[in-house]
Image 1 (cartoon, protein in one colour):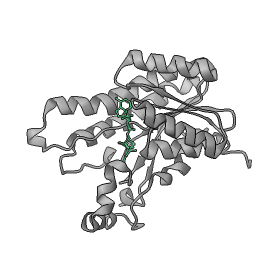
Image 2 (tube, helix red, strand yellow):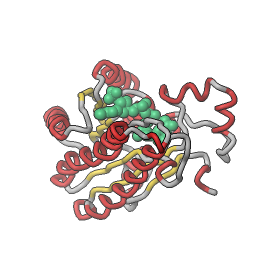
Image 3 (tube, protein in one colour):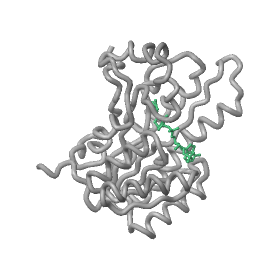
Image 4 (cartoon, rainbow, N blue to C red):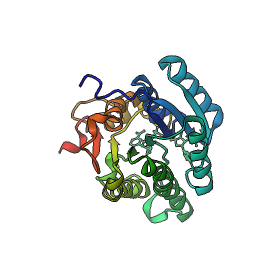
Length: 255
Ligand SMILES: NC(=O)c1ccc[n+]([C@@H]2O[C@H](COP(=O)([O-])OP(=O)(O)OC[C@H]3O[C@@H](n4cnc5c(N)ncnc54)[C@H](OP(=O)(O)O)[C@@H]3O)[C@@H](O)[C@H]2O)c1
């Protein structure tokens, strides 16, 4: 029972692991014993994270590039991971993009870019890594949704909210469709998390207070806040959980 959350000898791939939430989840899964692959487009940043995971947790780690919008690139990533580690047990889709634009002026090329990464990219990753998991008759997929996946939001976020709503229903649908292969598909839905992309909010006291004031726990999230939910969803502890989103949001969606 005490090993319920351990991930020893599991192979975890964290796409979007070059920084922010993905890096924190990669570190967390490594601390629980999983071998870690981080992947995205920026190899230098990925190598630094892989080295950090290896040196701070002692697990084997590697960095590979992938463009999630491209099927051939994802196929190549799967081959690199399975050549090096033999298999894949855990997939975390932590890549993402937001482009804020007024709804009535929204450039459709930006709309397509954000849907390509957040929605198509999630599906492509689930499709290619899901095939390895199907062969193994087991696997854990964790998608990054957002509180914006179930709540509308102004301020130019119509496309982003649309993508995260899609991620929520893709998660539920894949959970049902892949259940016969014992592949569990869940999501985590953070509120605002301070990462390099949102650091300016923390630096601006008025803006920070605006975001904090709607959080019942009265705090802005940090990437490490996602680790507990990710370890739970990656581990045996969640074997009877699929198709769910865990909102890591300080209570924002409780009301
Ligand atoms: N931070 C928040 O407040 C917050 C709140 C709710 C949900 N989320 C979600 O949580 C996830 C992580 O957020 P974050 O704040 O950590 O984001 P981030 O720091 O911007 O990281 C996103 C990652 O996505 C990767 N990426 C973008 N396009 C890609 C592509 N075409 N192929 C492969 N990788 C690509 C980027 O790496 P490369 O540039 O190296 O490709 C980047 O490392 C996202 O899905 C985001 O929507 C974040």
